[in-house]
Amino acid sequence: MTRFLGIDGGGTGCRAQVADISGRIYGTASAGPSNIVSDPEGALHSILSAAREAAGGEAALGDLHAVLGLAGGNVREAVDRLVARLPFASVHVVNDGVTAVKGALGDDDGVMAAIGTGSIFAVQRKGEIREVGGWGFVLGDEASGAWMGRRLLAMALRAVDGFLPMTPLLSDVLAEFGGPTQLVGEAPAMRPAEFARLAPRILAAGDAGDAAAVSVIHDSVAEVTATIELLQAGDTLPVVFLGGLGPMHASRLAGRWPQRVALGGSVEGAVFMARRRFEDGLSGAVPGGLRHG
Image (cartoon, rainbow, N blue to C red):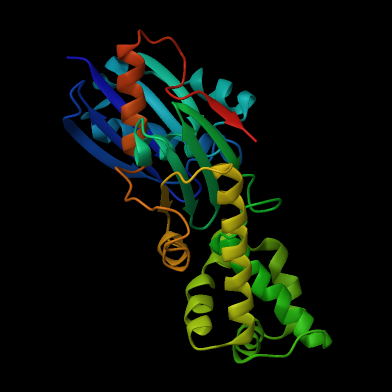
């Protein structure tokens, strides 16, 4: 029986789902991080481990038609290295933002705003996907948890210098790091998830009126608003908010555009794409051609 594998893989984990042509699910599994750029060997291990468990064993892997939505899936050299080592009957790799769009919207028009540790945004119109953001923590990930945490710590140092008032939240985080010098020493080695751990505290402090937290939240909502407006391009397409910070933005932007609940997640989107590619004769075309920028 023909079966289809969907993989959703990022910097924190990997999920797999195996289904038949009707969409009936036969197995699911999860494994470790799978960023094919920053850790290609670890990503390969995670992908194969999750696929093996979801499919019911090593022997089944060669019969699977797979679509993998991966962090780093838009880096051609990394994709080529990975695909050469995969045992599947067919394989197609895309950026995880593409599978998130297909999972959230299916074939419908709309905007996706996925905001968690990182962030990525996309619009789908008449089957064509345009993706913006998703450039990673160093140069992007605006409005994400990592972005918010980094912004708060930078504000704490500005407050030490006297440019900003020292708020209770800023004072608390400085004390937890042991002071500004220790913070500066630790920050270069901190990973995005470590910055993102501050996001829940920022939201709570913002609700309590802490000026620094209110400022970070305001700037985050402004970034999301500007990005969605760019993708709307004058339309009023429905918006799907995803990720740990999605509900916060959905609440603050209620009424700005119509909102809808996601049909599914990124792994469901990957299975959807795998089934569609098979029905279309494994043409290699992404259902909903991808354009970035």
